[in-house]
Image (cartoon, rainbow, N blue to C red; front, side, top):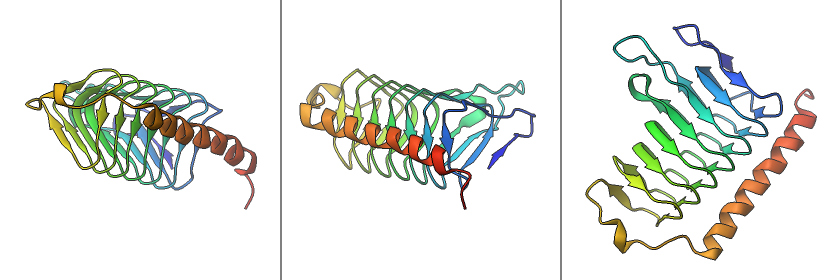
Length: 186
């Protein structure tokens, strides 16, 4: 469902993107070309800051927002998702938040008040809160990282992990094409 927010903002969705009919995209949201928004995803830019302003939630081209993902923001803060980024099933990205390009965010992971560099991999069930991750940073499954975490002890993204992330992105780009072809069928 595509709908306005109470401030009157309507999402801007590139015509080459696919938004599943069960997803909710609300308010000041900008979705780039060839983006896949999966079933039951919720992308909501509707809260305002103290002055009544809302920064957009922006999703870069060729990214995929999978089933049950929630993207929202506190007090009208911006959320930016780069290009070629995969956000896996039931993950939560809550702004303020900036996620780079070629990033993989695993199942059930939670991001809040953070910056994630390009080519990062955040594995399943992890939490990234109130910190900045450099490019090519690897967050293992079920780990919590915050502003107090010593990032020097955590390794960079391996070749195998990068290949897995690329495969997920490619598969979802293929899904955009397939679903766009059949979107008007019963």
